[in-house]
Length: 205
Image (cartoon, rainbow, N blue to C red; front, side):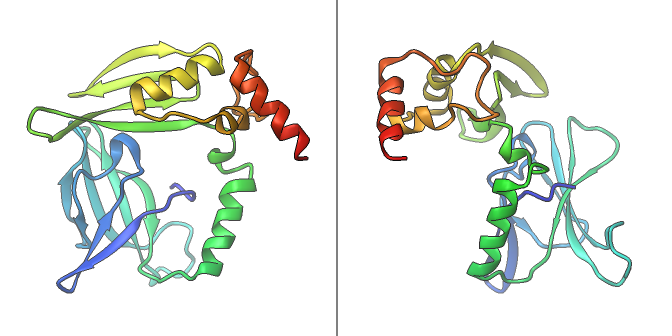
């Protein structure tokens, strides 16, 4: 199960809800009450389930966590995706967790670029998603996947972020990925604004 995920728990009228907006196409499409065994629709044909149970990693079976599971496209089995407790974290706890996801090479956040956007129908219901993973963009609606593009260099990825996700990077942000393991093979680009950003950054080091 994922060890690199962050979600929100919200309390309303004495009831706690799971609110997860960052799990891509497997995220719940609505707030999910913390009820053992509850099943709710996800995005498209997927379903989400919560269980309150122990996990194989624990030696003490009396220790239990909330386990979020997903079922894609009506498959027969739910697959455990991540687990969490209701323990309240402090600022110091977040500092430690941030260090782990930022520097631990077992964390895919250190070597993979992932961006998602939900697709809405005319009634503004969530029916699918657009996903960028590294150099590939795909659109998934109604259980059908459409390959949109394979990005060849950073210039194309910068343009794709603006076109498909509404994300417009400034010069420093464009240059920030250069030299990183997550950069596309032929980055850096030769765009003048990126070159300027690199030159400015070098004067500050």
